[in-house]
Image 1 (cartoon, helix red, strand yellow):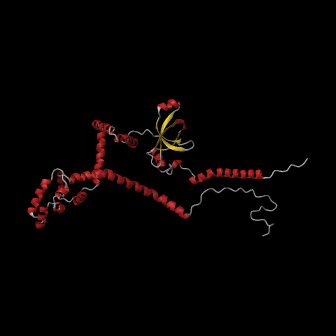
Image 2 (cartoon, helix red, strand yellow):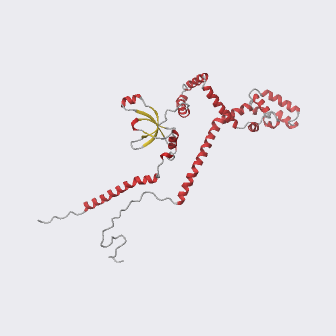
Image 3 (cartoon, rainbow, N blue to C red):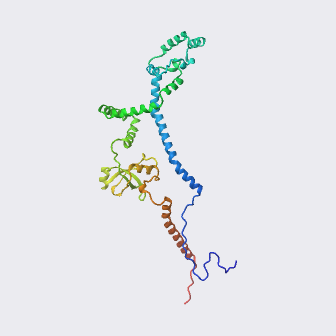
Length: 353
């Protein structure tokens, strides 16, 4: 190649160098089609998966801690006392029937009589009834009277399905709510709460759990109906918060400012957070409902109300915000290089006069 021949990057002969501006490329790489399809499928699938997960988790919690204990009490009341046996016989289940007999739990003489004559023999039936009468009372241990508890539970469950525990639990909650609304019920519940406040370990937990439940489930109007944005945890960083009260009188008198109390929920568990006091003139009211604000917090800012969504994506907004800074950094770097080159140049010699 001829040295005089202009190269691809050389300016055109006879002309000034090109003043074309080189625009910095925004950060980030373009996703491949496979990555885009995977993310799109993940976004489509995750809401359904999370919904099923939450429903299954709620069902397991209710089954283990609510309906499970209720069903256990119901089955115990039917199987382990003679009054419950009367109800079972009315449903066609007789715990004294041969199908529930447990031969290994019988005394040796009854086991021998059973092997010799069989369970239908009148002598064996009479001896078995006499032995059981001596061991049966109001409450019965099934193993002590040679009754198969597992098989009896299977038949009882078939006649009394576990869903009965859900119905009984709902009826108990409704009954308790009706009782708590009356004069006698309020006195009883008040006495029970005062007793819980005296127990050493319980008194450290119960008052706060009750406040938390009242905070979300009480029938009275919640005191925070206003959703605001505040500069927290530092100026320039904004957080969603709920106005909870008009603040503390001592703080207002000490600072001579109108400080209101706000609750700043944390993501993704909005039940935890921080209670802080901020000047009322520094909060920005947001056109959100409480439910919409909670969805914003739980989703980490993904579920924005439709009327608050921007026309550009988050990546585009970030790119627009970063480009001026990148251009300024590039200009500063160029100026620094020129200054360094000028300082490294040898000083010019003075001409003699």
